[in-house]
Structures are given as C-alpha cells and as structure tokens.
Image (spheres, rainbow, N blue to C red):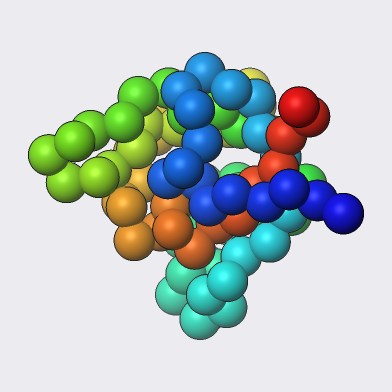
Length: 81
C-alpha cells in the first residue's frame, strides 16, 4: 500500500517518486512530458510560493522548473517514511 500525497502537500526538499496522475487530459500529460515527469520519476519540491500555490520543483538531473498549484494537485507521489 502506497501512502500517496499530491505534490502540493509534499514537504520541501523531500525526495519523492511520482505514482499517479489524476487528470489524464491530453494537455496535462503533454505538459508533464515537457517537464520529463512520468510514473516513477523522482523529483523534489525546492520551494513553495504562498502567493499562488505554485511550486519550484527539480526532476532528477534536470534544471528546476515552476509548476502551478493546479498541476501539483493532479500529480500524486509517494516517499519512504
């Protein structure tokens, strides 16, 4: 049993692994592909912005990028306790 959280709930600097995407719309999947995010991808939340809920994330060995709160709430991840 995986203990899943959406990406917006993850603690900063905690390494996590993508386990599911709740919104399967083509545009959403295309955006995730652009950022090289897919099932099994390891990433880390670098910073959370209270202003609009967006997140700065780093996908393993990629430059950091910003994703919106809407995207973050559709990406579910898990990590080792």
